[in-house]
Length: 185
Ligand SMILES: [Zn+2]
Image (tube, rainbow, N blue to C red):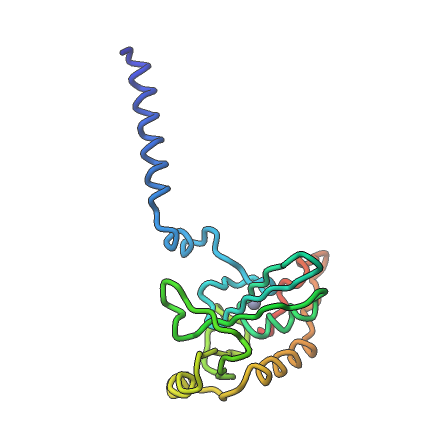
């Protein structure tokens, strides 16, 4: 084999090895590194680590449109733009936030803690957590604080806040993407 052919073979082997390593990298690790992480449709925060993630489906005619938001406030903002019909709404069970496969609950049957302590980097205000049972919510309340409410109550509060919220005026010559920055910081 000529030295040129040997060189080509060595380069090919290195490239192949690189591809194998890339394929073997755990998906979760890539996700946490910011590759392909899902973003809130309204404010742009990551949703995969949001303590009050909401996923819903909007049906317009025959088409289903996925909604993925970081918070109830952003969900209320998104509802203002719904042209079809919301056919399902699910909310993260806060007790499973750090699990490998976090559980999504049917939003209308979950119990909520409204006005808990929280992190604005992870979710839009007001801070709200969802639980699979009243007992679980009451137990968490000892450390997180907050008011125990039903889906209808938290949604009504957030829809009122969203209706009152005025997005910041665009600065000189800068037009933000539609909806970006619409969160009550
Ligand atoms: Zn958001």
